[in-house]
Image (cartoon, rainbow, N blue to C red; front, side, top):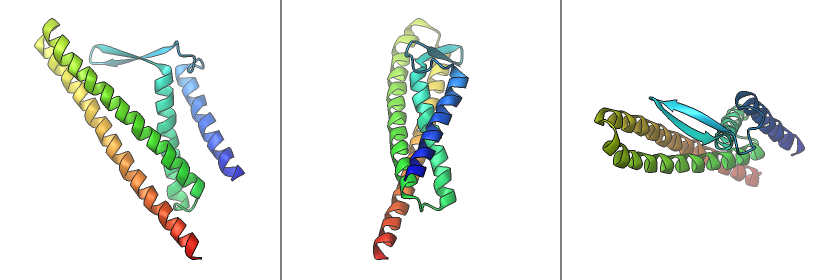
Length: 161
């Protein structure tokens, strides 16, 4: 158990170090922002949100790879993946809600103030981001269900011995 907690701490600290090198070490200060340039439009968000999302995404990916290599036999790794993946699904749902609201805002306000071509291209960009987020949610739910069934089978096999 101590070995697993040490492995989890090393994974999270490694990801925070990678995020710190990429975005700067004042990543969790709350007053720094990151700009995403999408088709001549800048989306500005706090680095805290990007860091938390990347921590969840990379932790889920690392633990899923670990589950595959250990053939789902490590209960702590199974539970860690389930928790990180559930939080990742929740964050993706929140991103979809934000993008849906933003898309409605673009349809209402941008159509009145800018050209139709710009509004149409922005709607396509937001729609593609939404489709990508929906696909990621479905994939994460599928992986979650697989790990739940494998963990349940592991508990059933342990109780029959």
